[in-house]
Length: 291
Image (cartoon, rainbow, N blue to C red; front, side, top):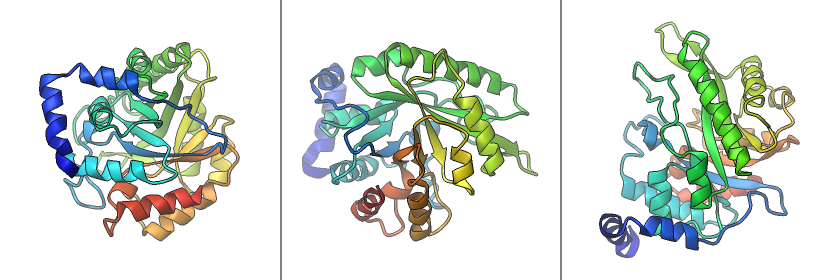
């Protein structure tokens, strides 16, 4: 970590925990949408679910100092509007002064830990609407995995509906990331990325809560995106995930999807923070260029 900033961060956390809220209240803020109408956000909420793997490396995101370095590099690049993260990551960035004049989205439900018996139980274990408002952030993000074989999905649907309504009460954006889930031959849950499955998931997600006035969608790039995105009139952001193909193939798919009328930008984490050549700045600049 540059210039002893990590040491200072750790000392502040140990001695002055109240500095986090103080930094949040001092921070210069900005609205979600600028005149360009486009958004480029970096995602860093994966570690809170124990999802540390990137491109086959199982512990890629485990080193917090390295993750923060990569986030600082990304947030300093021209055209990057902000970040999505859990309280631990966003509070580190706050204390490092990296969130000035940035869009900040708090991740809300991180309970479904991979490779556990409760993987589909996406209960709310991080931010709630009141905390997001107190911190002066722009939005709350929630994962909505719909597994027709798991009764826990009903609780997730109810939890997401409550969160959408609570965020709307504060006039804060709710960013909903929906997936239909199917079971493989081994019984493991996988996101169903067929166009018809995505359209079904989007249709359910946009109907959650007392109002959809403040709801946005977070959508993966799949086949037949034109038809998929016709399932909704809500503003949407494309998610990056952990893409299996080459960076050039990934960027080409993003560029095509960004032309669709409801798509407002990108929210990308692992593929930009941990690119194959390890050049974070170049990967982020390429993604910004697509906008």
